Amino acid sequence: MQPTTLLKRTPFVEAHRAAGARLVDFAGFEMPVRYTGDVQEHRCVRERAGLFDITHMGEFHVSGPEGVAFVDRCVTNDVSALAVGQVLYSPMCRPDGGIVDDILVYRDADELMLVVNASNVAKDFAWLEAHRPAGATLTDRSESTALLALQGPRSAEILRGHVPEAALGLGYYRFVRGPLFGVEAVISRTGYTGEDGFELYFEPAHGMKVWDGLMRAGAPHGLEPIGLGARDTLRLEMGYMLYGNDIDDSTTPLEAGLGWTVKLAKPAFEGREVLVRQKELGLERKLVGLEAEGRRVPRHGMAVEAGGKPAGRVTSGTFSPSLEKAIGMAYVATEHAAIGTALEVVAGATRIPARVVKRPFWTHGSHR
Amino acid sequence: MSYPDDLRYTAEHEWARLEGDVVTVGITDYATDQLGDVVFVELPEVGRRLDSAAAFGVVEAVKTVSDLYAPVAGEVVEVNGALSDNPAMVNQSPYGDGWMIKLRVADRNVLQKLMSSEDYARMIEEEHA
Image 1 (cartoon, chains in turn green, red):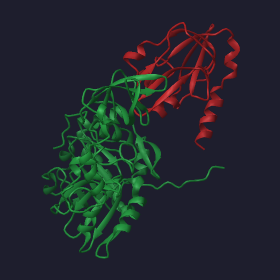
Image 2 (cartoon, chains in turn cyan, purple):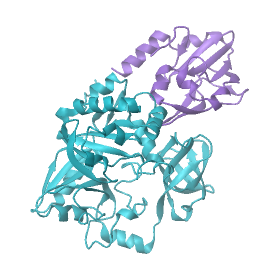
Image 3 (cartoon, helix red, strand yellow):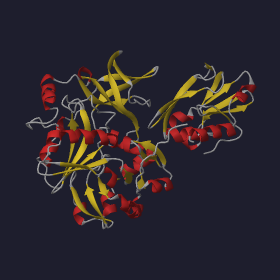
Protein backbone atom coordinates (compact mmCIF):
# COMPACT_ATOMS: atom_id res chain seq x y z
CA MET A 1 0.00 0.00 0.00
CA GLN A 2 1.24 3.43 -0.89
CA PRO A 3 0.50 6.18 1.60
CA THR A 4 -2.09 8.53 0.24
CA THR A 5 -0.90 12.09 0.02
CA LEU A 6 -3.60 14.69 -0.21
CA LEU A 7 -2.43 17.38 -2.56
CA LYS A 8 -3.55 20.93 -2.04
CA ARG A 9 -5.67 22.31 -4.83
CA THR A 10 -5.81 25.79 -6.24
CA PRO A 11 -9.19 27.28 -7.26
CA PHE A 12 -8.18 26.67 -10.90
CA VAL A 13 -7.51 22.93 -10.88
CA GLU A 14 -10.69 22.00 -12.75
CA ALA A 15 -9.94 24.65 -15.39
CA HIS A 16 -6.48 23.11 -15.82
CA ARG A 17 -7.98 19.66 -16.21
CA ALA A 18 -10.55 20.93 -18.71
CA ALA A 19 -7.73 22.57 -20.72
CA GLY A 20 -5.94 19.21 -20.94
CA ALA A 21 -3.17 19.91 -18.43
CA ARG A 22 -0.86 17.24 -17.10
CA LEU A 23 -1.04 17.76 -13.34
CA VAL A 24 1.85 16.95 -11.04
CA ASP A 25 2.68 17.24 -7.35
CA PHE A 26 4.65 20.44 -6.96
CA ALA A 27 5.50 21.52 -3.41
CA GLY A 28 2.42 19.67 -2.19
CA PHE A 29 0.06 21.25 -4.72
CA GLU A 30 -1.60 19.65 -7.71
CA MET A 31 -0.18 21.94 -10.40
CA PRO A 32 -0.26 22.03 -14.22
CA VAL A 33 3.16 21.22 -15.66
CA ARG A 34 2.08 21.33 -19.31
CA TYR A 35 -1.06 21.86 -21.42
CA THR A 36 -0.09 21.53 -25.10
CA GLY A 37 3.72 21.42 -25.11
CA ASP A 38 6.59 23.24 -23.40
CA VAL A 39 7.89 24.88 -26.57
CA GLN A 40 4.51 26.05 -27.85
CA GLU A 41 3.57 27.46 -24.44
CA HIS A 42 6.95 29.17 -24.12
CA ARG A 43 6.57 30.87 -27.51
CA CYS A 44 3.01 31.89 -26.68
CA VAL A 45 4.33 33.94 -23.74
CA ARG A 46 7.21 35.48 -25.71
CA GLU A 47 4.99 36.38 -28.66
CA ARG A 48 1.51 36.97 -27.19
CA ALA A 49 0.53 36.25 -23.59
CA GLY A 50 0.14 33.36 -21.18
CA LEU A 51 -1.73 32.77 -17.94
CA PHE A 52 0.04 30.94 -15.11
CA ASP A 53 -1.52 29.55 -11.95
CA ILE A 54 1.14 30.17 -9.30
CA THR A 55 -1.17 30.00 -6.31
CA HIS A 56 1.31 27.60 -4.70
CA MET A 57 3.55 30.58 -3.84
CA GLY A 58 3.30 31.70 -0.20
CA GLU A 59 2.17 35.13 1.04
CA PHE A 60 3.00 36.53 4.48
CA HIS A 61 1.76 39.84 5.81
CA VAL A 62 3.78 41.97 8.21
CA SER A 63 2.42 44.95 10.09
CA GLY A 64 3.02 46.89 13.28
CA PRO A 65 5.32 49.82 14.11
CA GLU A 66 8.47 47.71 13.78
CA GLY A 67 7.30 45.83 10.67
CA VAL A 68 9.57 47.54 8.15
CA ALA A 69 12.62 47.43 10.43
CA PHE A 70 11.96 43.72 11.09
CA VAL A 71 11.87 42.74 7.41
CA ASP A 72 14.79 45.06 6.63
CA ARG A 73 16.91 43.17 9.17
CA CYS A 74 15.99 39.81 7.62
CA VAL A 75 16.69 40.58 3.96
CA THR A 76 19.75 41.87 2.12
CA ASN A 77 18.04 44.49 -0.06
CA ASP A 78 16.81 47.85 1.22
CA VAL A 79 13.20 47.63 2.42
CA SER A 80 13.29 50.93 4.33
CA ALA A 81 13.79 52.85 1.08
CA LEU A 82 10.60 51.46 -0.51
CA ALA A 83 7.79 53.83 -1.39
CA VAL A 84 4.19 52.70 -0.98
CA GLY A 85 3.26 50.80 -4.13
CA GLN A 86 6.76 49.52 -4.77
CA VAL A 87 7.92 45.90 -5.00
CA LEU A 88 11.41 44.70 -4.11
CA TYR A 89 13.22 41.46 -4.96
CA SER A 90 15.55 40.28 -2.22
CA PRO A 91 17.41 37.31 -0.88
CA MET A 92 16.84 36.52 2.80
CA CYS A 93 20.06 35.24 4.35
CA ARG A 94 21.28 33.17 7.26
CA PRO A 95 24.07 34.56 9.47
CA ASP A 96 26.55 32.51 7.40
CA GLY A 97 25.37 34.22 4.19
CA GLY A 98 23.49 31.17 2.87
CA ILE A 99 20.13 31.99 1.27
CA VAL A 100 17.01 31.02 3.25
CA ASP A 101 14.84 32.09 0.32
CA ASP A 102 14.53 34.71 -2.39
CA ILE A 103 11.36 36.74 -1.94
CA LEU A 104 9.34 39.72 -3.11
CA VAL A 105 8.51 42.49 -0.63
CA TYR A 106 5.40 44.60 -1.36
CA ARG A 107 5.28 47.95 0.43
CA ASP A 108 1.66 48.83 1.14
CA ALA A 109 0.42 51.82 3.17
CA ASP A 110 0.02 49.99 6.47
CA GLU A 111 1.72 46.65 5.91
CA LEU A 112 4.21 44.62 3.92
CA MET A 113 3.38 41.54 1.88
CA LEU A 114 6.16 38.99 1.45
CA VAL A 115 5.86 36.51 -1.40
CA VAL A 116 7.91 33.37 -0.79
CA ASN A 117 8.66 30.17 -2.66
CA ALA A 118 6.10 27.38 -2.26
CA SER A 119 8.62 24.83 -1.04
CA ASN A 120 9.89 27.27 1.60
CA VAL A 121 6.65 28.48 3.21
CA ALA A 122 7.07 26.56 6.47
CA LYS A 123 10.82 27.19 6.70
CA ASP A 124 10.50 30.92 5.96
CA PHE A 125 7.65 31.41 8.40
CA ALA A 126 9.61 29.74 11.22
CA TRP A 127 12.72 31.73 10.29
CA LEU A 128 10.89 35.05 10.28
CA GLU A 129 8.94 34.25 13.42
CA ALA A 130 12.22 33.54 15.24
CA HIS A 131 13.47 37.02 14.27
CA ARG A 132 10.21 38.90 14.83
CA PRO A 133 10.30 41.71 17.40
CA ALA A 134 7.30 42.36 19.67
CA GLY A 135 6.41 45.46 17.65
CA ALA A 136 5.65 43.51 14.47
CA THR A 137 3.02 40.94 13.56
CA LEU A 138 3.54 38.17 11.02
CA THR A 139 0.62 36.33 9.40
CA ASP A 140 0.70 33.52 6.85
CA ARG A 141 -2.07 34.21 4.32
CA SER A 142 -0.93 31.66 1.75
CA GLU A 143 -4.12 29.61 2.11
CA SER A 144 -6.35 32.62 1.55
CA THR A 145 -4.50 34.05 -1.45
CA ALA A 146 -4.89 32.98 -5.07
CA LEU A 147 -2.17 34.11 -7.48
CA LEU A 148 -2.21 34.24 -11.26
CA ALA A 149 0.56 35.60 -13.49
CA LEU A 150 -0.42 37.15 -16.81
CA GLN A 151 2.77 37.43 -18.83
CA GLY A 152 3.63 38.44 -22.37
CA PRO A 153 3.68 41.54 -24.59
CA ARG A 154 -0.13 41.57 -24.91
CA SER A 155 -0.76 41.52 -21.15
CA ALA A 156 -1.68 45.17 -20.69
CA GLU A 157 -4.06 45.10 -23.67
CA ILE A 158 -5.80 42.05 -22.22
CA LEU A 159 -6.39 43.83 -18.90
CA ARG A 160 -7.60 47.07 -20.48
CA GLY A 161 -11.13 47.83 -19.30
CA HIS A 162 -11.03 45.16 -16.59
CA VAL A 163 -8.68 46.92 -14.16
CA PRO A 164 -8.33 50.54 -13.02
CA GLU A 165 -6.57 52.71 -15.60
CA ALA A 166 -3.77 53.29 -13.05
CA ALA A 167 -2.86 49.61 -13.21
CA LEU A 168 -2.09 49.85 -16.92
CA GLY A 169 0.24 52.79 -16.27
CA LEU A 170 2.26 50.95 -13.60
CA GLY A 171 6.02 50.86 -13.97
CA TYR A 172 7.94 47.62 -13.58
CA TYR A 173 7.98 46.42 -9.94
CA ARG A 174 5.06 48.66 -8.94
CA PHE A 175 1.59 47.64 -7.79
CA VAL A 176 -1.86 49.02 -7.03
CA ARG A 177 -4.90 47.66 -5.26
CA GLY A 178 -8.13 47.69 -7.20
CA PRO A 179 -10.88 45.68 -8.85
CA LEU A 180 -9.87 43.01 -11.35
CA PHE A 181 -12.98 41.80 -13.19
CA GLY A 182 -14.83 43.20 -10.18
CA VAL A 183 -12.73 41.24 -7.67
CA GLU A 184 -10.59 43.18 -5.19
CA ALA A 185 -6.96 42.42 -6.06
CA VAL A 186 -3.34 43.41 -5.78
CA ILE A 187 -2.29 44.15 -9.35
CA SER A 188 1.48 44.02 -9.65
CA ARG A 189 3.64 44.69 -12.69
CA THR A 190 6.10 41.91 -11.96
CA GLY A 191 6.93 38.49 -13.34
CA TYR A 192 9.37 35.65 -13.87
CA THR A 193 9.51 35.53 -17.66
CA GLY A 194 11.31 38.63 -18.95
CA GLU A 195 8.14 39.80 -20.66
CA ASP A 196 5.82 42.60 -19.70
CA GLY A 197 3.11 41.31 -17.41
CA PHE A 198 1.24 41.30 -14.15
CA GLU A 199 0.99 39.17 -11.05
CA LEU A 200 -2.52 39.19 -9.61
CA TYR A 201 -3.36 38.39 -5.98
CA PHE A 202 -6.94 37.92 -4.79
CA GLU A 203 -9.21 35.78 -2.63
CA PRO A 204 -9.50 32.17 -3.81
CA ALA A 205 -13.31 32.24 -3.52
CA HIS A 206 -13.42 34.48 -6.61
CA GLY A 207 -10.83 32.44 -8.46
CA MET A 208 -12.86 31.24 -11.42
CA LYS A 209 -14.43 34.64 -11.98
CA VAL A 210 -10.96 36.08 -12.57
CA TRP A 211 -9.69 33.05 -14.53
CA ASP A 212 -12.69 33.04 -16.88
CA GLY A 213 -12.57 36.82 -17.24
CA LEU A 214 -8.91 36.73 -18.21
CA MET A 215 -9.28 33.82 -20.62
CA ARG A 216 -12.24 35.52 -22.32
CA ALA A 217 -10.54 38.93 -22.52
CA GLY A 218 -7.35 37.25 -23.71
CA ALA A 219 -8.88 35.05 -26.40
CA PRO A 220 -8.63 37.71 -29.17
CA HIS A 221 -4.98 38.22 -28.20
CA GLY A 222 -4.07 34.53 -28.33
CA LEU A 223 -3.84 34.06 -24.56
CA GLU A 224 -3.21 30.46 -23.48
CA PRO A 225 -2.78 28.81 -20.07
CA ILE A 226 0.89 28.01 -19.41
CA GLY A 227 2.37 25.23 -17.27
CA LEU A 228 5.28 25.11 -14.87
CA GLY A 229 7.44 23.54 -17.59
CA ALA A 230 7.42 26.67 -19.74
CA ARG A 231 7.63 28.84 -16.62
CA ASP A 232 11.02 27.24 -15.99
CA THR A 233 12.34 27.65 -19.56
CA LEU A 234 11.18 31.29 -19.61
CA ARG A 235 12.87 32.15 -16.31
CA LEU A 236 16.04 30.30 -17.23
CA GLU A 237 16.41 32.23 -20.51
CA MET A 238 16.41 35.34 -18.29
CA GLY A 239 18.93 33.82 -15.88
CA TYR A 240 16.48 34.22 -13.00
CA MET A 241 17.12 32.15 -9.90
CA LEU A 242 15.15 29.03 -9.03
CA TYR A 243 15.43 28.36 -5.31
CA GLY A 244 16.60 24.80 -4.67
CA ASN A 245 18.41 24.69 -8.01
CA ASP A 246 20.55 27.80 -8.40
CA ILE A 247 20.48 29.12 -4.85
CA ASP A 248 19.91 27.50 -1.47
CA ASP A 249 21.10 27.53 2.14
CA SER A 250 24.66 26.77 1.03
CA THR A 251 25.07 29.55 -1.58
CA THR A 252 25.39 33.28 -0.98
CA PRO A 253 23.78 36.08 -3.02
CA LEU A 254 27.24 37.32 -4.05
CA GLU A 255 28.20 33.91 -5.46
CA ALA A 256 24.87 33.82 -7.31
CA GLY A 257 25.51 37.17 -8.99
CA LEU A 258 22.83 38.88 -6.89
CA GLY A 259 25.22 41.54 -5.59
CA TRP A 260 22.79 44.23 -6.80
CA THR A 261 20.32 43.03 -4.15
CA VAL A 262 22.85 43.12 -1.28
CA LYS A 263 23.01 46.53 0.37
CA LEU A 264 26.15 46.28 2.48
CA ALA A 265 25.71 49.95 3.43
CA LYS A 266 22.75 48.91 5.59
CA PRO A 267 24.05 48.90 9.19
CA ALA A 268 22.73 45.49 10.20
CA PHE A 269 21.06 42.50 8.55
CA GLU A 270 21.38 38.73 8.77
CA GLY A 271 24.44 37.57 6.87
CA ARG A 272 26.02 41.01 6.55
CA GLU A 273 29.36 40.18 8.24
CA VAL A 274 29.97 37.12 6.08
CA LEU A 275 28.95 38.94 2.91
CA VAL A 276 31.21 41.92 3.71
CA ARG A 277 34.11 39.53 4.22
CA GLN A 278 33.28 37.60 1.05
CA LYS A 279 33.28 40.83 -0.92
CA GLU A 280 36.64 41.89 0.54
CA LEU A 281 38.36 38.54 0.06
CA GLY A 282 36.83 37.82 -3.34
CA LEU A 283 34.62 34.90 -4.35
CA GLU A 284 35.86 31.34 -4.67
CA ARG A 285 33.05 30.40 -7.02
CA LYS A 286 30.48 32.17 -9.15
CA LEU A 287 27.24 31.27 -10.85
CA VAL A 288 27.74 31.58 -14.61
CA GLY A 289 25.65 31.15 -17.71
CA LEU A 290 26.57 28.25 -19.99
CA GLU A 291 25.81 27.81 -23.65
CA ALA A 292 26.35 24.27 -24.87
CA GLU A 293 27.58 23.23 -28.27
CA GLY A 294 25.11 20.89 -29.94
CA ARG A 295 21.80 19.79 -28.54
CA ARG A 296 22.82 17.80 -25.48
CA VAL A 297 21.50 19.75 -22.50
CA PRO A 298 23.40 20.47 -19.28
CA ARG A 299 21.17 19.30 -16.39
CA HIS A 300 20.96 20.08 -12.68
CA GLY A 301 23.67 18.25 -10.76
CA MET A 302 26.00 17.46 -13.69
CA ALA A 303 29.71 18.06 -13.01
CA VAL A 304 31.57 20.79 -14.91
CA GLU A 305 35.19 20.29 -15.93
CA ALA A 306 37.91 22.55 -17.30
CA GLY A 307 40.66 20.75 -19.18
CA GLY A 308 39.59 17.44 -17.61
CA LYS A 309 39.73 18.80 -14.04
CA PRO A 310 36.74 19.48 -11.75
CA ALA A 311 35.58 23.08 -12.12
CA GLY A 312 32.03 23.13 -10.71
CA ARG A 313 28.47 21.89 -10.99
CA VAL A 314 25.40 22.65 -13.13
CA THR A 315 22.45 24.13 -11.20
CA SER A 316 19.87 24.48 -14.01
CA GLY A 317 19.71 23.56 -17.65
CA THR A 318 17.24 23.39 -20.46
CA PHE A 319 16.85 23.57 -24.17
CA SER A 320 16.06 27.23 -24.84
CA PRO A 321 13.06 27.46 -27.17
CA SER A 322 13.80 31.12 -28.00
CA LEU A 323 17.48 30.67 -28.82
CA GLU A 324 17.16 27.05 -30.00
CA LYS A 325 20.27 26.24 -28.01
CA ALA A 326 21.04 24.20 -24.91
CA ILE A 327 21.72 26.56 -22.00
CA GLY A 328 22.37 26.26 -18.32
CA MET A 329 23.80 27.82 -15.20
CA ALA A 330 26.61 26.44 -13.04
CA TYR A 331 28.72 27.34 -10.06
CA VAL A 332 32.32 27.30 -11.24
CA ALA A 333 35.59 28.23 -9.56
CA THR A 334 36.20 31.95 -10.14
CA GLU A 335 39.25 31.24 -12.34
CA HIS A 336 36.86 29.58 -14.85
CA ALA A 337 34.08 32.18 -14.64
CA ALA A 338 35.21 34.67 -17.27
CA ILE A 339 32.92 35.17 -20.27
CA GLY A 340 34.09 32.98 -23.14
CA THR A 341 35.82 30.33 -20.99
CA ALA A 342 35.58 26.86 -22.56
CA LEU A 343 34.24 24.20 -20.20
CA GLU A 344 32.84 20.68 -20.42
CA VAL A 345 29.69 19.34 -18.81
CA VAL A 346 29.81 15.67 -17.83
CA ALA A 347 26.66 13.86 -19.00
CA GLY A 348 27.30 10.21 -18.20
CA ALA A 349 29.90 8.97 -20.67
CA THR A 350 29.50 12.09 -22.82
CA ARG A 351 31.25 15.44 -22.42
CA ILE A 352 29.11 18.38 -23.53
CA PRO A 353 31.34 21.25 -24.75
CA ALA A 354 30.09 24.57 -23.37
CA ARG A 355 31.31 28.10 -22.90
CA VAL A 356 30.61 30.76 -20.30
CA VAL A 357 28.21 33.41 -21.61
CA LYS A 358 26.55 36.52 -20.23
CA ARG A 359 23.19 36.37 -18.51
CA PRO A 360 20.43 36.95 -19.41
CA PHE A 361 20.57 34.54 -22.32
CA TRP A 362 17.50 36.16 -23.85
CA THR A 363 17.73 39.93 -24.28
CA HIS A 364 14.63 40.72 -26.36
CA GLY A 365 11.98 40.55 -23.62
CA SER A 366 9.19 43.12 -23.46
CA HIS A 367 9.56 43.91 -19.74
CA ARG A 368 10.87 47.33 -18.83
CA MET B 1 -2.99 7.38 -25.19
CA SER B 2 -2.67 4.66 -27.82
CA TYR B 3 -0.66 1.42 -27.84
CA PRO B 4 -1.12 -0.36 -31.18
CA ASP B 5 -1.88 -4.09 -30.99
CA ASP B 6 0.72 -5.08 -33.59
CA LEU B 7 3.63 -3.81 -31.44
CA ARG B 8 5.43 -5.28 -28.43
CA TYR B 9 6.49 -3.16 -25.46
CA THR B 10 9.13 -2.86 -22.72
CA ALA B 11 8.87 -1.63 -19.14
CA GLU B 12 11.19 1.25 -20.21
CA HIS B 13 8.50 2.44 -22.67
CA GLU B 14 10.10 1.35 -25.94
CA TRP B 15 8.03 -0.34 -28.62
CA ALA B 16 9.20 -2.96 -31.13
CA ARG B 17 7.71 -4.00 -34.49
CA LEU B 18 8.91 -7.15 -36.28
CA GLU B 19 9.00 -7.23 -40.11
CA GLY B 20 10.92 -10.19 -41.56
CA ASP B 21 14.02 -10.39 -39.40
CA VAL B 22 14.15 -6.64 -38.71
CA VAL B 23 12.77 -5.02 -35.57
CA THR B 24 11.89 -1.32 -35.67
CA VAL B 25 12.23 0.44 -32.30
CA GLY B 26 10.79 3.65 -30.93
CA ILE B 27 9.30 5.07 -27.74
CA THR B 28 5.64 4.96 -26.78
CA ASP B 29 2.97 7.63 -26.75
CA TYR B 30 3.11 7.45 -22.96
CA ALA B 31 6.87 8.05 -22.96
CA THR B 32 6.57 11.12 -25.20
CA ASP B 33 3.83 12.48 -22.95
CA GLN B 34 6.09 12.04 -19.92
CA LEU B 35 9.10 13.61 -21.65
CA GLY B 36 7.44 16.60 -23.26
CA ASP B 37 8.88 18.24 -26.37
CA VAL B 38 11.78 16.21 -27.74
CA VAL B 39 14.62 18.43 -28.98
CA PHE B 40 17.37 15.92 -29.74
CA VAL B 41 17.78 12.19 -30.24
CA GLU B 42 21.24 10.64 -30.08
CA LEU B 43 21.31 7.38 -32.05
CA PRO B 44 23.99 4.69 -32.54
CA GLU B 45 26.11 3.99 -35.61
CA VAL B 46 24.78 1.57 -38.18
CA GLY B 47 26.53 -1.77 -37.71
CA ARG B 48 26.71 -1.62 -33.94
CA ARG B 49 25.67 -4.80 -32.14
CA LEU B 50 23.40 -4.30 -29.16
CA ASP B 51 22.65 -6.67 -26.33
CA SER B 52 19.12 -6.84 -25.06
CA ALA B 53 18.48 -3.93 -22.64
CA ALA B 54 21.71 -2.18 -23.73
CA ALA B 55 21.55 1.62 -23.82
CA PHE B 56 21.60 2.63 -27.49
CA GLY B 57 20.97 6.36 -27.34
CA VAL B 58 19.60 9.36 -25.55
CA VAL B 59 16.45 11.37 -25.97
CA GLU B 60 16.67 14.98 -24.81
CA ALA B 61 13.42 16.81 -24.13
CA VAL B 62 13.16 20.44 -23.06
CA LYS B 63 12.70 19.52 -19.43
CA THR B 64 14.35 16.14 -19.09
CA VAL B 65 16.68 13.56 -20.58
CA SER B 66 16.24 9.81 -20.87
CA ASP B 67 18.34 6.85 -22.04
CA LEU B 68 17.05 4.54 -24.75
CA TYR B 69 17.31 0.76 -24.33
CA ALA B 70 17.30 -2.00 -26.92
CA PRO B 71 14.18 -4.14 -26.43
CA VAL B 72 16.00 -7.12 -27.96
CA ALA B 73 19.55 -8.02 -29.03
CA GLY B 74 20.49 -7.29 -32.62
CA GLU B 75 22.60 -5.40 -35.13
CA VAL B 76 21.70 -1.82 -35.98
CA VAL B 77 20.88 -1.82 -39.70
CA GLU B 78 19.30 1.62 -39.98
CA VAL B 79 18.75 4.73 -37.86
CA ASN B 80 16.15 7.43 -38.40
CA GLY B 81 18.36 10.26 -39.66
CA ALA B 82 15.34 12.52 -40.19
CA LEU B 83 15.12 12.97 -36.41
CA SER B 84 18.27 15.08 -36.38
CA ASP B 85 16.48 17.82 -38.34
CA ASN B 86 13.05 17.21 -36.90
CA PRO B 87 13.17 15.62 -33.44
CA ALA B 88 9.58 16.77 -32.80
CA MET B 89 8.46 13.83 -35.00
CA VAL B 90 8.97 11.67 -31.91
CA ASN B 91 6.11 13.59 -30.24
CA GLN B 92 3.98 13.92 -33.35
CA SER B 93 4.20 10.35 -34.58
CA PRO B 94 5.79 8.06 -31.99
CA TYR B 95 4.80 4.84 -33.82
CA GLY B 96 5.36 6.19 -37.35
CA ASP B 97 7.87 8.81 -38.52
CA GLY B 98 9.24 9.08 -34.98
CA TRP B 99 10.81 5.59 -35.06
CA MET B 100 14.45 5.48 -33.93
CA ILE B 101 16.42 2.41 -35.00
CA LYS B 102 16.05 -0.88 -36.91
CA LEU B 103 17.72 -3.99 -35.54
CA ARG B 104 18.38 -7.26 -37.41
CA VAL B 105 17.61 -10.08 -35.02
CA ALA B 106 18.85 -13.66 -35.09
CA ASP B 107 15.73 -15.09 -33.52
CA ARG B 108 12.32 -13.81 -34.55
CA ASN B 109 10.72 -15.27 -31.45
CA VAL B 110 12.53 -12.94 -29.05
CA LEU B 111 9.71 -10.43 -29.28
CA GLN B 112 7.43 -12.88 -27.52
CA LYS B 113 9.27 -12.03 -24.30
CA LEU B 114 8.11 -8.42 -24.52
CA MET B 115 4.76 -7.11 -23.33
CA SER B 116 1.64 -7.14 -25.44
CA SER B 117 -0.27 -3.90 -25.95
CA GLU B 118 -2.76 -5.06 -23.31
CA ASP B 119 -0.04 -5.87 -20.74
CA TYR B 120 1.68 -2.56 -21.36
CA ALA B 121 -1.53 -0.57 -20.96
CA ARG B 122 -2.17 -2.44 -17.70
CA MET B 123 1.34 -1.63 -16.45
CA ILE B 124 0.79 2.09 -17.13
CA GLU B 125 -2.55 1.95 -15.40
CA GLU B 126 -1.01 0.28 -12.34
CA GLU B 127 1.78 2.85 -12.18
CA HIS B 128 -0.88 5.53 -11.93
CA ALA B 129 -3.15 3.69 -9.51
